[in-house]
Length: 504
Image 1: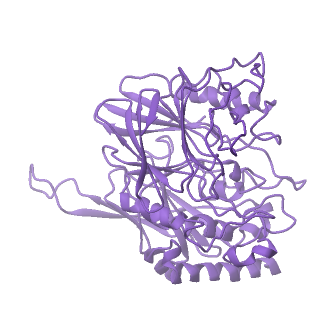
Image 2: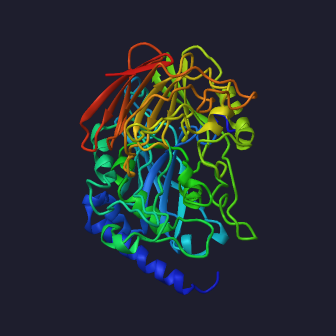
Image 3: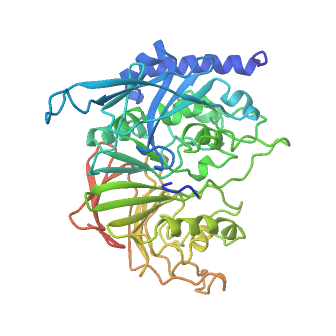
């Protein structure tokens, strides 16, 4: 746990380089697809394809912020240029309007060698932002440079990529069918202080189905023969171009989803968004050509809400799970449990501090079902792994189910799901399961090791693309969540008080 802490290019590499150039051109030509002018300009001058700021524990960066850029291979890491206010102007007792400039070398993050052509055309660079910075730039691109002294607005979203599977595809070129770029601009217009991303950036896991080729928007396919699905160009198309507005508006705390498991989009996640310095090759295929199974260490970061109030966000990696999915209890619960035990430790009660658990899979989640169908509680392994370890938390902030949802299990932190960030939504209606979590369809406990929970006393859900803006109310532990559509219009308001949440 982290305490708040070569050889000649192959044909495929040359083809990948051509695609990289095409995507950079798309960033210049199509701002409606989510690219902003600064990224377009920089891709011409310094090879920077994307620039953003991560929220990280104070044990990594004293400011809790780290600058990242994505660059084309063969280009050295650029410098991070920051401007800080000077402490005085030489006149006793008088504040200075002057400022000091500083250039900080960025360190390269290199993908695992066995990722081959999938990531051979990009690299990532990182540098910690100093505290007290007024502004930060890489070349001509401005980055979010600081966290305010008090956090007033938190954007929350997840499950954002354009879904492409062997027999199904969203229309990635239609902003109504895949609205991530519109959502990103709406988030930027809301001017959040920080953005929480609950996982699942990457959904381009197949070549476009031949009968749907007109709606994939020239989506980069996986490279055959590799035990994972993501590519550098897929990440540019699925995340960085459409999310450019939101990434330039506020620092992002980026959780890992099951679509970032190592056999799916994990190589890109660990290269581009993982907080650890040595993480870029975590998901690289083994010597035997297999994708590893990994769980990233639990970590936490504190966000200041007022002079006497702090929000601690504790991040648990629930990306990897057994092959049986979310509806069965397996031995994976025991594998996952130490990471929730670390979360319990990091969320220990402290005066003036409230805690949210941020993980991808819901602990008390349902999915919308067809009329007349019985609903069930899902992510069973995660529910079991966290059993008895979540009492310190006020809220459970998750995604995974492609919908917006709030569920209240008596005596437990309210479950809030933000899985409506652009990926193809679920169908059906919201139905309360007949029994509480950790019981089977007949009402019997799933295992003597994990006590069952009472059934939910409250369930709200909505199948609508969008995101949420959380704003603190006056008293500790009290928040308002505005669930907003792709254009930024609120479609529901929910209030969280202590461990309870209600909407409407």
